[in-house]
Structure formats: C-alpha cells, structure tokens
Length: 492
Image 1 (tube, rainbow, N blue to C red):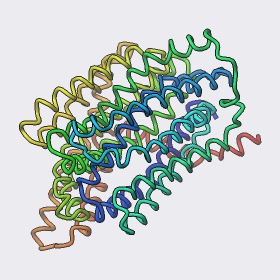
Image 2 (image 1 turned 90 degrees about the vertical axis):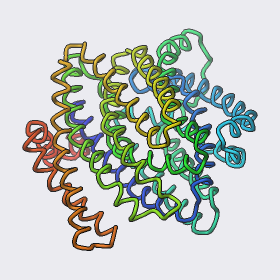
Image 3 (image 1 turned 180 degrees about the horizontal axis):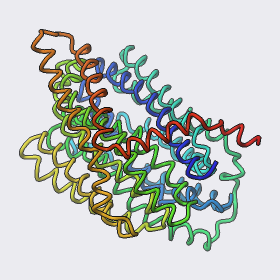
Image 4 (image 1 turned 180 degrees about the vertical axis):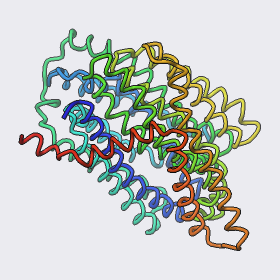
C-alpha cells in the first residue's frame, strides 16, 4: 500500500479499536460514579494530573523525533530512553516532595494518598512510550490500536469491579496501574529491546541533535498538558474538588469525539506526513481537515444536543452539574480536530517553534480567561475553555495555510460540515419536545430515540450541504472495503 493508504488504514483501525474501548470505558465510568462521590473522584484526578504533568515534562519532545526520523537507530532510541527516564524520575521526586504544598493550594487535600501509587503507572507509561513510537514509525498502526484498546478494556473492568467492592478512589488507581502494566508488557515484547534499551555510550553529538529538535517541541507538549489538565486544578481552587470532579467528567465526555477520532488520526498522520513529499502533504492537510470535520462535528454538536437527556439517564443527583457543563464543553470537539491535524502537519515539517508558540499562547489565554470568568460561576468558566481552544484552532489554521492553502477556502471546507449539524441539532431538540409532549418518562429510551433522529437527519443534511466531502468519505470507505488485506499485499 502507499503511505496515504496506510495512513487511512491505520486511522481506521485506531478509530474503531479506540472508539469501541472508549464506549466501554464511558459505560464503566458511569457505573463507577454510582459508587464514588464527586469530591473523592476529584481527589484522584488531582493526583493523576501531577503524574501526567511529570510524564509530559520528561518527554522532552523526543517521542516525536522517533516518529518522524525513520533512520534513527537503536543508539538514538537508547539516548531518548535514558534522558526521558532520568527527567521523569526527577520530576516525580519533586512532585512527591512538594505534594503537601500543591494539594492544599488547589483544594485537593488528599492528593498524597493516591500520588505514590500513580507513580508506578506513570513509570510503565514512560518506558512503554518508546517501543510504542517505534511501532508507529514502522506504520504498525493496527497492533498499537488493539494494544491500547486492550489496556482500556482492562482499566474499565478493573475499575467497575473494584468500585462495586467498595474500594472508592483506589478502584481507579489500581485499574490505572493494571492498564499501564498491560500495555507496557505488550509493547516491551513486541519490540526487540536491543532497538531501544540496549546501552550505548552517551554522545554529545547525538544528544545535541535530538534535543535541538525536541526541546522547542517539549515546550508545546508541556503547555498542552497544562492547558488540558491543570484547568481541573484551577476549577478545584475556585469551586472545590467536588465541582472539579463533575467538571472533569463532563470534559472527558465532551472530548470523547476528539480523543477517539481526531487524536487517533493525528497519531497516524504524524509519521505519514513525515514520509510524504511537501506537495502531497499540503493536499492531504486540507482534505484531512474536511474529512475529519464531517465525522467529528456531528459527534460534538450531537453530544451537546443530547447532553441534558444523557445526564438524566445515567447520573444521579450528586452529579447533577455534569449535563449543563457537558453542553458547553462539547464545543471543544468542534475546534480540536483542526488542532490535531495542524500540529501533526507542522511537526512533520519540522516547524516545532510554531507549534510551541501556538500552544503556549493558548495556555496563557486559557488560564487568564478561566480566572476572569471564575467570579461568574462554573458555566462561565466552561465557556472560557471553549473560546480558548477556538482561538488556538483559528491561529494554527492561519499559520499552516500560509504554505499555499487558501485560508478562506479551508474555512469554507470546514464550515459546510459544521452547518450540516444544525438541522441535526434542531431535530434532536424537536424530538425531545415531542417525546415530552406525549409523556415519555424513560430518559434512556428518550436518549436512544434522540440519537436515531439526529443520525438520520445528519446523513441527509451532510449530503445536501457538504456533498463533496460526504461523497469523498464514502468513496474512501468503499475503497477500504474492496482493498485486499495487508497480509495478502505483503505476500504478493
């Protein structure tokens, strides 16, 4: 297969495997919330954020180096393993020492109870990320997708069982360790350790080369984690860990279309972009955004439309704030598909300074807007988060379209799929009113009917308003079904 075909195939596997696992994960989360109070859930999230921040700091932008530099040998991989592990260990040590100050400042008093355990999961994730990136570089997208999905399934099963047994917040902690260990073991076995863990003498020339590429990008990675995770801590500081727990749950649901579609496409496009000629890369950029928009936009807008019914169907009174927050935060999923593709494009083009500048600017805009909005309540804060991501998407789009793509034309290509979601949203709201008028009491049945109505209306409106993109997507799906499996191609 060509690189483009492998990218499409890899994206399909990533999306299907991740989406299936994520759906089970969402069901598991809904069950777990029956046994865990929002405050305790928020305390666990606070500890997880610290560990995730340590992971982001330790990456040093070097994982992207492995993905885009297909000629990087085992000596380079060992350098990356060594430096990322050392930095992660130092960052974790600082977090463990300072948690008694960090926790109370953000209103997360029990942070120290969970932090040491999550450090174990963090170390598994830190080490397994190296062989995972080597597998991505070799375009083994299917294997990575299935492994990650298996880890999510293990997490979901473990969290549900342990929560039902009364383990409280520790149910999530133990399940997190299980997920990280399972994925780590599989990745360790799949990639010969001599390709990344065999010791080599540390050389300044190699160190300088990888850090010159990675350090500017690490600024972007750290800013990205801060802006997508530390918003929880800001929420906790102003409103307490209980509200933060509900906010985190609403945020996680709202970004589900992003993490399970856009992020998977971005992971596939990074190594694929890196192996394309510049002209092919530019053509793929515009087409990818339009195709991703017609898939993700209805998921985002549809999630906002059904948020009230979804909250009534699955959450009890202690999680009542999730529904309104979910409706507002779903706007994230409208803008972030553009961000993922733009970032993959710029990384593959070695424009790491531009990536870092956009991400850092967005981080400061996000935090400033959240702090300014806090006196007006949590809903105003949710709106500020959505506006900050919209600013980032627009800025990134303007930067990459300077390579020869039309800024207005690209916006128009994205606007058509977005406009196609408006009839869908109107139909969902109309269906809800109609079901209420006839006295339907079951929120779960109402949710199913709203989704069916929305899906039918969207398909029709997509072909009517964004027909070119809809037909392009349909053509890709048909080609995918007709293509022989990769094994047959390899054998031929």
